[in-house]
Image 1 (cartoon, helix red, strand yellow):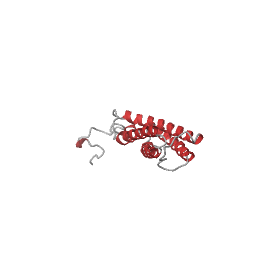
Image 2 (cartoon, rainbow, N blue to C red):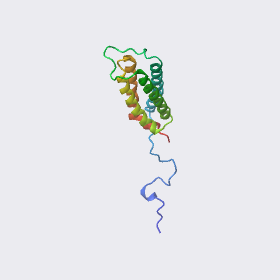
Image 3 (cartoon, rainbow, N blue to C red):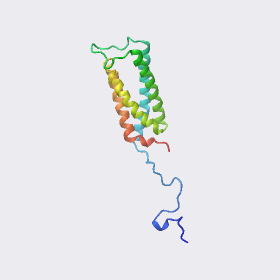
Image 4 (tube, one colour):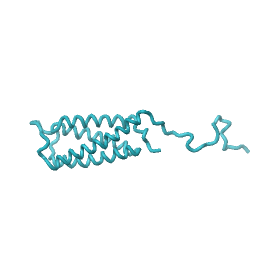
Amino acid sequence: MTDTSSTAAYGSPGPYVPGQFTQTPEATGWAGWVVFAGTLMIMLGIFHAIQGVVALFNDEYFLVGPSGLTLQLDYSAWGWVHLIGGTVVLLAGVGLLAGQTWARVVGVLLAIVSAVANFAFIAAYPVWSTIMIAMDVVIIFALTMHGQELRRR
């Protein structure tokens, strides 16, 4: 009979050795951008939480021009949105640094939501909101372009 367990006749390097051939791409210099994005997500989560706590405890802190906010919300409701959203962003950033794929997907979605939320908040605090939107864009870039490099092996 013919031995079908050997593939030497087809030019194979020999018997299968576990771990010898992996499909996981090697990490490049871009992996640092993903770590940066995870760290930035943790920082953004803390910033959102601080912004939420300030809005909850001091409604008068955020000054709004004569045109008002893009959305008409009570600052207490806005504070809860920022506090809860900031906590979720922080947890996703920690998950991303741990190499979790779910955290990459959640990170992109939350960065989009964060950018939109800060756009709505731009009349109350324009400089802060613009900086937060810029950080969200960097996070989206890093996670969509090179997020697979930190995938758990």
